[in-house]
Length: 301
Length: 332
Image (tube, rainbow over all chains, first blue to last red; front, top):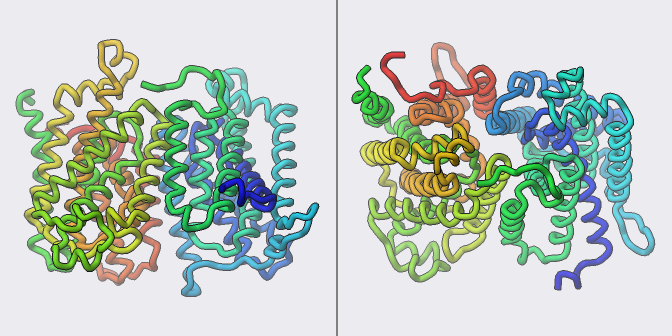
């Protein structure tokens, strides 16, 4: 029954969603690598970018997107400077709760800015034409899907080059493996962390452009649901490594897309339960992550 | 101080604080009374959460599920029979055709929360750290989803209303004192001490024969039962409830209270819950316009901004919370 309704279009959409989620997963994973911090407020960076796009909808598209990048990256760096830096070395629980607080705070700020015109939500119209379908090999695919996949592949490729072929990339990998030892060997903590936060901000900006094209209605809880899903995907995939985290993000995006596309709405009411029950099962069987083979000792009692 | 007196003081301080709030609620106007009672129910919820997170050192985002289960169990079974068939016709006959008393419903909430927590905890308590955080969050999602969609066990996505509003000053105060006493007794018992040892050093604790899984499961179950009880108090305070009210925002708020007060002590849980409740009530009033020396009228949404900022500030300046995570002491 599921396979019957599974056509090429659904798969294409699912791949597109998976690509966007993979980018978010990388953004979360990069910061986790150097800071050991799960950034719950990552979705609010995306949300801020989406609002920027909505408020600058009457500008030229290129300027609007540039503004989105500037806002998101600045916010990302500010978050690091004001909140993450003083919290460095705290327990993971404390840091997670702190990003919780920041997330709710930014959401409230967005509400405050948004509600000035007495309605909640803004519509970003300028880049919506990308959402139109085009025909590729007899299948209707929305342009944004193609763009999303291409952008993700290029971004991940560039990132891989950066991490594997440059000095700062080497430093980042060293810091992610063992921060203390890396520092002893001359890796500058603030530089590496700053760079990781910058990269993760750039990725958030890309994500906000692509999500806003698909969902032009921007509200304070924009990308909140996506962040939760991606976080789950990242942990299920294995947060300790960037590649497993990315794979986890892609997998959960793809799965969500396929299931949502293939099942009629009245059959999906208990879908979240099934998905999260599966998540619990994976965590119980492979607490280090689904794709993390033979990695060091895992804390389990 | 003499050692024999110390536990008495440690329990008396939070208990007196709770009683003071309870008595205070009878002296204010009926429109302000709700804030005091809300604060008391918050104390019950935060202490319930503290019993697990504080004693075990494992983060859980799932305790609100047990509050929700307790609230809906207690709520559904106290709606008067004559109106229940009309508003909730799809319920299982067992739930539809029976109504129990107020105190019994609170105990039922506690039992429902405790049993649910035990079943969930059985596999989940093997996890630590991040995996535990995400898995317990998944529990919250599953619980919320089922409560919201399955109309045979509850109101589904609509509001559960017509619940008798029996949580008054006396009930709230006594209820919270019961929760406090249970939490205090647990943390001073052999079980509690073993778990706290595993929190400080899991390897050493295991070395001296502590079964960490079993101890965490105990705490999770006790915490679930107390959370279910607190849920019962909550539903009888509000008179009507939706699944959205016991979901993400309340999870955030109660965790904020616990972290602000200090994760690792009962005193911290109580102080945090009362301090944040007080601030929250003030901000709610201020959003509607209040007069304190100068006229203050904050736009909607400011409440969350200030709460979030204060929480982040406490975490940065004093990561161990207002109380430093220590129990109350007369002399430092």
